[in-house]
Length: 502
Image (cartoon, rainbow, N blue to C red; front, top):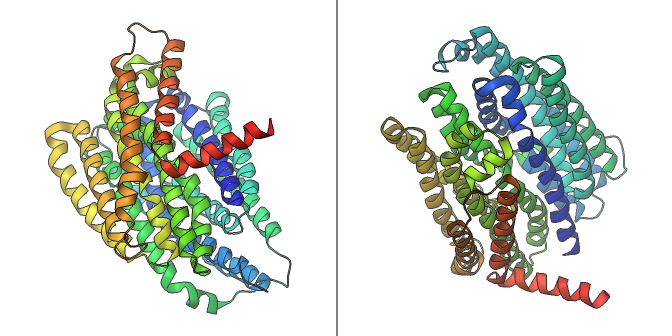
């Protein structure tokens, strides 16, 4: 348990820093390149989320297999052979991504974006560069997953802090001092992405236990093929579901309006992903080891602890951002006109992003059991419903209707998904998850945030707004903790231990 706590904290720091630097610099990106060019960044994020899932499940396989082999005796050579084999496959898939993006670039530049003042040549070059960046980020994620499986998450997140800072800060410097263009932005992303991938590769190979020379073994691919295929379909369909709104809206809405939606989505997904990915990364290998040792009691306890922690950290933050979206955007961007356009979208999408994060531990539990079919079918159903909903609501109510459709489908999907999972895995635990892990802490947090929203003083300056929002966040999180029994016991024990030491 201490290792898991340390890993969660390390992941929170690493992912938190990565999210913070990327979100903090968004107003500068928009200042230098404009909202239309930033819409291309939104398109890139959507394509990255989908194409990176063409890794055929290699990142999940890497993490799961290294976690499993680390719990067995004499697995050193097998671990090194696994990394070398999957590494070569991942490099081939990265090349495929570059080819795909280069192939679709002419068509996208001519036919995809509506009302754009950007030239076709600029869009074409940007799409090609996107392919290179996505391929390099795929390799970066692959090596990160290896360090996750080895439970070297402190090392991983130290490197993440440094590398993500270089990527984000370098982007601003390039736009400021060299060229304030979208092409320069993606060129730097490619250069920094290559450096990040090489750094993570070096760290992973250094962290692996010493043994003989790593070998390419085709039998490893045959062994993991079924699980990898299932994971690949699960992650691909999940990414399509999360990104289908942006892909559709990039073609259905004027490019400027889509830029507003892309900005709201970036803030929502970035802030919620910070929490969900941090807890997922720590829990997934731990779930795998407990399942391998057939310790269902500890698995159940850890699942509920992780689920309550997910709710306590996600829901209050999402509610605060939702209720105070305009204030947050005004303080952050110092642009009232931009805040007015983006705030109504952000208020809705951030709650949808929280529901996406709530599903993460159920997904981790299924992956640890090697069960991916439920995720694939659930994602396909959700994609169909969201696609149909967007086709209906966007012509009627525009971007705000699209955000609301995304929220409703995400909420329904989350409850359906977790309920069906508990009919097979950790049976009889659904209603405990629903009440103790989700509803009680969420209602407690909602009550506090609503009070702060109703009682907010008028005519506050930026500092007063910030302090009011932070107070709402702190007290709503505390309220959620008080109504999350496992997390409350953990926090009480931690407080008593610190007080006793003093």
